[in-house]
Length: 98
Image 1 (cartoon, rainbow, N blue to C red):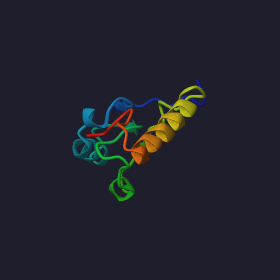
Image 2 (image 1 turned 45 degrees about the vertical axis):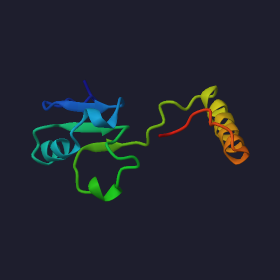
Image 3 (image 1 turned 120 degrees about the horizontal axis):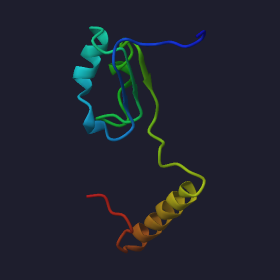
C-alpha cells in the first residue's frame, strides 16, 4: 500500500478528561520513544501552557471543542447571557460554579 503509515509503537488519544492522562509520564514516554504518538484534546490544566509542549515530539494538540455544535453553541450563549442578567439582578445563577 502506498501512502499508508504504520507505527510500531503505541498511540495515545485523549478526548475524554485531562485528568485521565499523567501528562508528565506522557511527555517522558514520547521523548524516550516508548510511545509513538499522542493526540490531546483535553489537558490537566486548561488552557495548557504552550511552553510545556514545545519540545515534545510526535504530539498533536487541539483546543477542547467537543461540545460545540450548531444546536449547543446558541444554547451556551443564551445561558451565559441569562447568568449575566441574573448576576446583575442579584438572582441565583442557572449554573453556578463553586
